[in-house]
Image 1: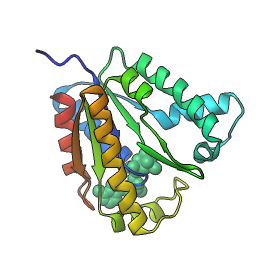
Image 2: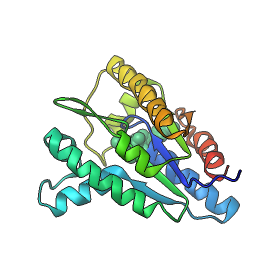
Image 3: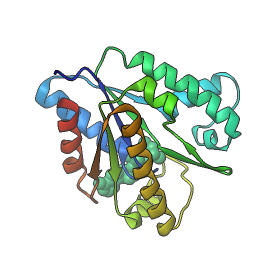
Image 4: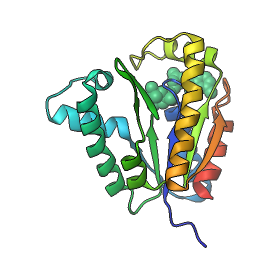
Length: 196
Ligand code: ATP
Ligand code: MG
């Protein structure tokens, strides 16, 4: 049976290189297959919803809102994404776990996962030391500092969260390593999943 699901969720911990790998893969698909992929970001949708309501001014303030507010904004963002993902080939760039002061908020709870119905969840991973380094050298964002063993734990929990989405929706789960200086390799794996 032909694949009728159009969404690939790309996830992984902050600073692992999701956005970099996605942008490279989308360019590859454009060059090689003449296809456009729509990139949606749950964090961006949440930021737009929260800032329209005057709740926050900066994207990195999102994870500092109360849990109840984050959940409410997340629900609206999930619905907006599901609506936009009805027609085009789509990548959803998102986090599976968001560190809040009240523990991890699950980025893809059942109602968001089921609304989106992804064909695949791609988990971008890298060595914890490299992730720590990328976070400090990237001046475009304000990411929280974390020790490498915390990064390792966070990354393992992301695997569990990605598998949960697969369990709920029937999506496949694909781990892609984003090796230092090898974005193109990771991007080419993502491009193959997009065009499968
Ligand atoms: P966030 O979840 O916070 O949005 P992200 O996973 O999208 O983070 P990026 O913004 O894509 O991460 O990348 C973080 C930093 O790491 C950037 O400065 C980027 O240039 C760098 N980077 C990404 N991939 C690699 C790689 N393979 N080798 C070296 N540096 C990389
Ligand atoms: Mg990003």
